[in-house]
Image (cartoon, rainbow, N blue to C red; front, top):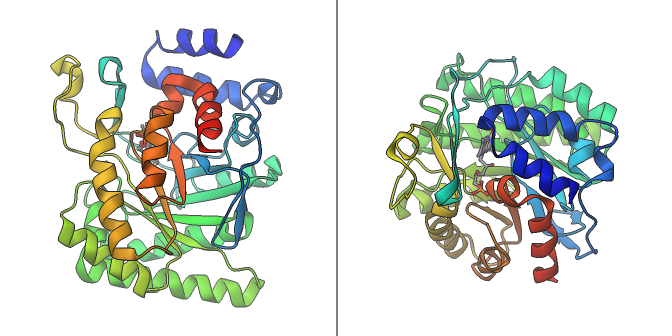
Length: 334
Ligand SMILES: Cc1cc2nc3c(=O)[nH]c(=O)nc-3n(C[C@H](O)[C@H](O)[C@H](O)COP(=O)(O)O)c2cc1C
């Protein structure tokens, strides 16, 4: 009840302020008293035991400031980030918009974050016992030709502190970032990450799986190319998808629906599902896939699983419906 009132109140104030207040509340020592518990429904994937298949998607807790509070919301795993080597302010405000009639969000945050060193401190302090993913990116000022250095820098600092790493090359809000999904740039990046992963394994005797997060705005040919490259380079899984730059059939006023940035929530479901289906077909039945994009109900979650997802993640559905949705989905997937 308390959580319901808090969530409804946060929906009345500007979106980014509401988000910042939610993160503050979730990082307080009392945050573990809110939320919900879920029954065990374990999934074994990439050598990791996930207590349930429903995760928090990246971008909600970019800096790892609210891990403890989020751990009490019923998720089977939490992905923090996107984090970059250096702190950066992100794009000018306003940059976060709620499209309530569409059950959607548009954001053009631009990887606002406090940098990898801050995140490392937060993760160490949290002493989180659950499954943690760290999503990494490149600074805006780093040219694509030097992007590998940024990803490797973050990987080296983070791999010992988490269960998996996500390489984010699909945010629409960092100029040219999505070009890293193409041709030689993709091959070079993935081969470089594999090298860093194997080197880290030799030094620490810990193998940290790497997943690659892709966009829903690609053709089937591009998706097939990417999937093959991801598998051939020895990456461990794919997360599909990030937000979309497409706008179709939105009900919200144009002042909102035409904002630049990535669209998430209900209107993303169909494109994200098409992407998932294409990737699953190309990757075969055994390759790990985490599906995200547009899950707003138990039915949406079930559909992702039927299309071949091993795990799912949620962002916008959590913003609109809170931990009740996480509990309901977990019950439906039992
Ligand atoms: C405000 C906001 C910020 C986001 N930031 C990130 C991010 O930093 N890194 C990332 O990989 N995805 C980010 N995402 C994308 C989500 O992780 C997710 O892929 C997308 O929102 C689709 O899922 P959903 O429909 O459940 O929201 C962000 C999404 C939103 C709404």
